Amino acid sequence: MAIDSRRLLAALLIGAGTTLGAWAQPVALGANVDGLLEQARAQSPELAAMRLEADAAAQRVQPAGALPDPVLRVELENINNYGSDARPSLLPNRVGDTKYTVLQPLPAWGKRDLRRDVAAADAQQASARADATWSELAARIKTAYAQYYLAAGTERLTKQNLDLASRLEQIAQARYAGGLVAQQDAIRAQLEQSSMRAEVIALDSEKQQLRARLNALLARDAGAPLAEPQALRPVPALTALDAPTLWQRAQTSSPLLLAEQARLRAAQKNRDLTLRNRYPDFQVGVVPTQMGSRITTWGVMVEMNIPLQQASRRSQEREAEAMVGAARSRTQALQNQLRGDLAENLSGLEAARRTEALVATQQLPQSDLTLRSALAGYETGKVDFATLLDAQLQIRKARQEQLKAQVQAQLRLAEIERILGADL
Image 1 (cartoon, rainbow, N blue to C red):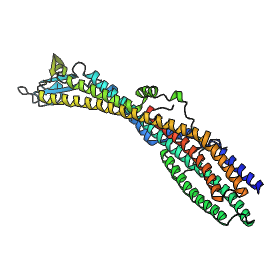
Image 2: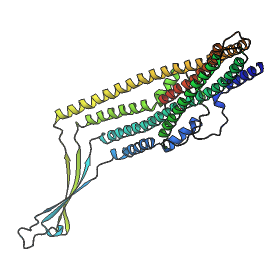
Image 3: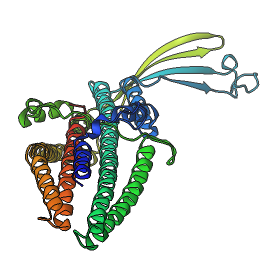
Image 4: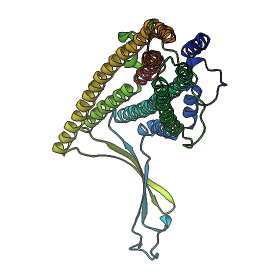
């Protein structure tokens, strides 16, 4: 009986000491998060659409500042050739005279530059939104992968403990056959195994759901195969997680913030353009006049609009100013939100790391000692079977707490990287 107990304890310690990140499996899609991110970057239709929209916005910058196309006007006068014997005609050399007017619209000084600036700000906003789309998609993939890893790891631990519970049942059966314990011990071990089998079924279903979610994020068929998760990404050192430094970095790299800042610039330039509408636009033209088959006279012209509708323009100016205020407030609100989210996730990440360290250095060794003591006591009849099962449950719970802490750190890290718009 002592030999069986030592084998059982050795199997338990080996199972508890096995880290999920060291599974010896070939790298395949789903084995790590980097491969999933590469797949999504290349295949995501949502990301492709945002990039094409950003490219379209960039193509609007040059036309926004270009001069309007010139206008050609042809006027045929005296087409009935009144006062002569000629028949009515629409040919320029067979009417009284023909005027050719070439007009070039000229916006007031500075308007073209302001229109170009507005279009450039819109293009920067579209580009930042494309980056934000990728950051959001990457964060969702990282989160789903971490949950997938948790489900797979919990399933692995549960199966290990199911095997150990089966061995405990064998020990209880042997001691019952020897008249050393009651049959209740073996029945209790069987009940524990049934509970674990139900948990394995639930975890397998959860894995299936997470595979479908990941495949949807990768623009793949929901039932497409994915490898078992093998490892989590390493968490950066504490020196890289300084809150003021990360916030300073977020202010210059966060795509969400960059998009709002571009929107604010566009609103400011549009306000300046609206103020310029107080000044008239011009059209200049050249007017050659043809009589018969030759040009006989030349003329020039200048045309401008008269901005008399002041009430309408003041309303437009107040609208533009209000839009600037709204964009500024929206930018400030986003800064406050992102700064709070960053601090919250940094605190959560630190708590997860401390929890993992506590479990690894204290809870797991203590649970190991408790199991050793319970197993030795059960062999000598000093400890009942319920105490032994409780000791096994404690070491299982400690391993699960360590796994949950690792995954929680990954979830916090994904949120921090979403805010920054880049990996740490």
